[in-house]
Length: 385
Image 1 (cartoon, rainbow, N blue to C red):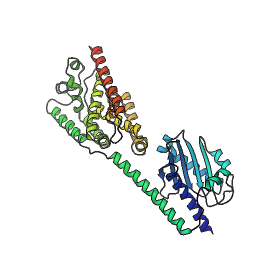
Image 2 (cartoon, helix red, strand yellow):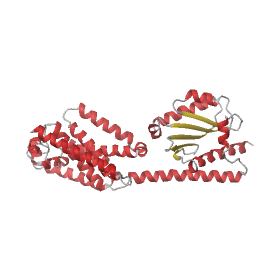
Image 3 (cartoon, rainbow, N blue to C red):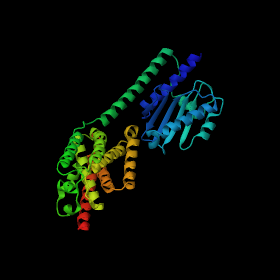
Image 4 (spheres, helix red, strand yellow):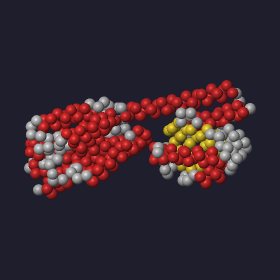
């Protein structure tokens, strides 16, 4: 009898999962390895359902489950994207609880969360009983087992397809131009070293470093050439490591042609930022690399779930760390960094993500880019002169 009771609850559990996916337009967004903990989302209603196959006997069983799940959720994309959404917890239990489920659930949860328990005994509320009647009773053991296996395979298929979608998104392109830019900046570093030294101001100015007075005299190419020059080996090393790791990620996500535009536009934006706010001679790919961070932030804005599930926390922490580091440590061209960050974000909006393109949005970002660069140069040339 116990085996039949367990199978009955298993059957109900997977019937509910099937019902949510196939009939209620809910999307499975997470499944535990055991398939005993499932999360569903309905975007139209901004609602989430957590379906749990767990025995709740004592009050502590429920409290431990809620506490553990809340801790897990705080570190997950689901929590970040659903703080104001409606949540429903559905528990399927083989045994009857020795406590008032609805009262205890209401005392240990906060926010817009409701809970329902489906157990063998007739202790369920009318709403739960009405919901349970939607599903077929257990009649034939073999048919029930076949149905359960079919739903498990469906869940597995959804999980695999989601993983493939993430891989397609994160590995859309190949790191071609990031490797080319890496080679170029290493080449020019040694060129500077053999022609006067990469830390020699005269040599830097001669080969294209940012120099405000020369920019004002019309040497506009100095908006671009500083991207490929570096001041000393440590400067080259740090930017080369960043380009290798961050640049390749951006190029894989956006593709080579989009990455090329993002990198160069961000680099120019960084030079303009330095031109406006820093009087010193400067060079380096930092503005362009910060532009890559900006492109990743745009990716997070457009695809938040994939972003936070994969790159998000690390990217945000790196950006914040580098900005704070730039303000605390003297001699760092933070204006160039911030200019590149903003330029990279807007440039990413202009080129858009592959397979997620909006011509109208792209046009808006292009206009913002033109106005931003144009007005900055107009202000810089008039103010500096």
